[in-house]
Image (tube, rainbow, N blue to C red; front, side, top):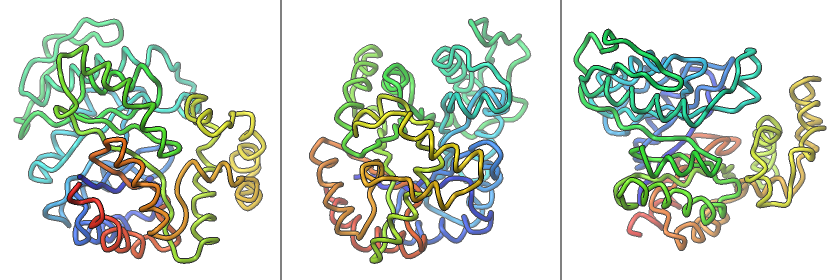
Length: 332
């Protein structure tokens, strides 16, 4: 079993180094940082982490080819892999349509854009010419890296929709499917397996991370409040497929979205998050986390990725997962 941590890019930049060092000491295999719009830059954060750690793999979850050109994504990937001595994994996907819309950009052909971007980035970090005449990308023969990449950088796809989940199996080295709730894994896996079959591959050929949200603390109320804040911020952007697992709709999140994003009233938004909405993740003690994770393990998950908020005391949460949770599943 493999274990990773995921962070949003909404924390003070220096804190990530502290958490990365704690994660490395606690036995985590990977650490991922998101690159959501108008927050801190994941490539900068990961550069700092790369120079402050020795073993743990690092990655982006995710970069998108709408706001960052795929050629620049390849540049980031090869440079971070060089800086980290071969510990970088590139997480890429189309991103959320709502957030892309903030910039007035058209969210056109997301699946095609990702497939073509993955093909081009793989060529660039494989020291090949990446000339392409696709439906979205049209690059000339001048499309090649002017420095020698350390290796072909592994690419993980972020995915929630059935079509993008299928592409994890078809074209990626790994996957970062968001599981809201964690039990959604049983619905995700068939789509990934369809892509594997299409590409003549098997599940052992990829690293499929079961990406969950958790908030761990001995203080139940504090754990739930931290998770509620994340749900208030992101809930309205979750797909109907995800919300349907808990009999929720995007309409249920509209008052929360208005309070959080339009009125800036985060306290009211948090109070409107219901117990059913909290089931999107896991909030409570390490024992509560283990109980929900046993279900994931029984479904065949071999990589569990713990995502934000993690808890009111993030360092304590990292240490608790390393001490109390990872040993329970490491031999699985």
